[in-house]
Image (cartoon, rainbow, N blue to C red):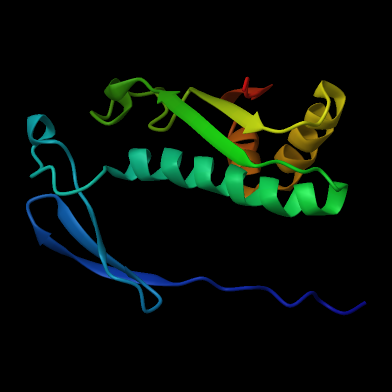
Length: 152
């Protein structure tokens, strides 16, 4: 049996000052990762967990596009609202407290003429194929995912 060819992604960057980091991806403009001023940062950009929630939301949206094509599901718009809850004591080194999200909730609103049953199949397909959704689930994070059809 031949081993599958793996894709490798790469980013690089550096710590600018305080908690502000510059991150480079491919040939795109760099972006900043920082913390709010109240946590010692300069508020130059989202913090790593905010970027993760954004990445998870975008990953869901992108996988929706791929899955919709495979399922012949048509839609004209997609909105998401995502939040995560965590116990900040983990950052402070309190023993036994996980440092990542305990729960993540994503609400996806799809503008479509498709049925509720078709939307359910799309949601299940996306969740099965979305790398960040599966990363959360495999890490034991309680994920709440609600998909609805947008009212016109």
